[in-house]
Image (cartoon, rainbow, N blue to C red; front, side, top):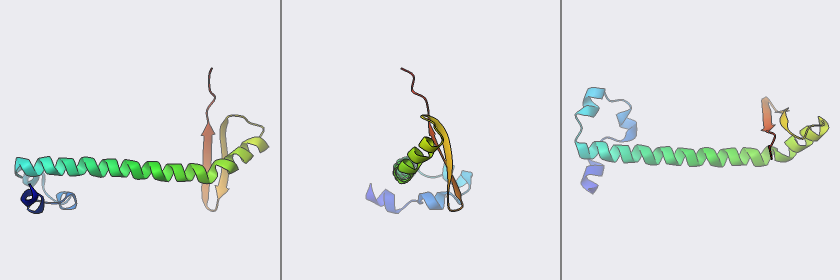
Length: 95
């Protein structure tokens, strides 16, 4: 199986290939590329979650303060951080 991994196009190379060339790849290569793509997608989702968690932590206290200043318990508050407008939404919880 290692020989197949070294003797096939990478995902990056695949982006520049014609569909007809991709179709012509051996089934083993396509299966390995599919696995690579799935792993890359999973890694990207984990990175997105990591970044979003960092953003939430960074602005949590500021959003609480902005919501208190606006006299709101829920809803959206907006504030600036440099050139970026931050919008934080806290939906109402229905019990």
